[in-house]
Image (cartoon, rainbow over all chains, first blue to last red; front, side):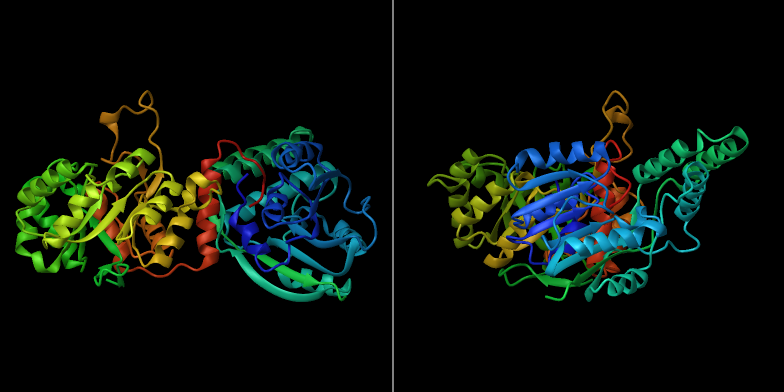
Length: 239
Length: 294
């Protein structure tokens, strides 16, 4: 699998070679692939999404059965030992963690991090106020709040995560811009629209229908948009 | 327009090279005007080939008028000694000039071709002879083939002075060896070989001929090009930011002025913006959304 340049850039200055790593929130395994390419000794690709777990196994795990363990687990209570991991990555993870969950996940990641562990957090700054994508995310969040009582996405400023992680004992190392602007392609727009529709459809018609209509309108209006920035933060746990 | 050393040839090429295939689709008067336009923008490196329709003939009058201002690259698809000599003479005749500044092996694709051109009776022998006679000044190679083959060519041709190969955000986003033109660029720079980028403006393949018959295509390119000023500028800035010497315009004459404008206003693209383009192309390339994030 092609390793995105965002991942390559985020890992470029980390000592991945020979390390035991955790990809927290593995998605389809892009960072796992990047960690393996950079010589990781072992990668735990952790996700609570069964479909993602299957994808990572097929795309990355089969080629590296001795180096990849796909772990289907919740990030607030992982099966990994305390002080067991040397590099933790959270690439595009935090924005899918609601504020009520974020701190618990960071606490768990800190528990399993060995002294001297490196942590890489890659995420998106809140979108500019005039961004059309911001409206789509707002509708996606509205639908998800009504359906499940939690937001679909929360874009944490880099400064917020820095302060939060400092509170967990992580020392800030560096920040770099991964994407500027962020290309929200037609595929991204469609994927977020579909996620919003999935939340809106089960709602009572009086709530769901206006949301579905607004989603359709936004998809047609946006097409694609390049806006906002994606950042990479690196931290170190004192050894 | 910015210029950069073309490897160790001693020539400083403008950051845009005029791919004169564009002249093929113009009448002579239009071709003359286009060359004037290109020169007005300060472009000093032109590239032509006998396989570009009658581009050599249409370039001829203005080339002769401005011969001292133009670094002329030409090519041949011949692989043997005799054929190369013949094609070189034919090009000189059609262009109406006595010398060619850069003569290139055109479109290397297969290992056997590399064996053939490097053999005693191969194309390179004819080129070296012409160089010794002062008919050509420099020897180059072009390929959109396997990057490993191009690397082999660098190893096997000691007097190779320039390379022309594809580079764009779609190619840059692929990790496999078949797309590793970055390795070619790195090696070329190590060896002091000048680099010319092609396909910088390729957006993707044309729709199938069932959906869009060839006669209905809006551009004379064999791939679908980007065609807005913004995209053209992004693509140019991306390509020219890759530590290359020069970027060749896409072949349709309707797009040349836009590319000249982009080249004239070239600004180095920072890495975050480069990644943005690569990401954008990577997702465009994917037929289904894989994930919500980048």
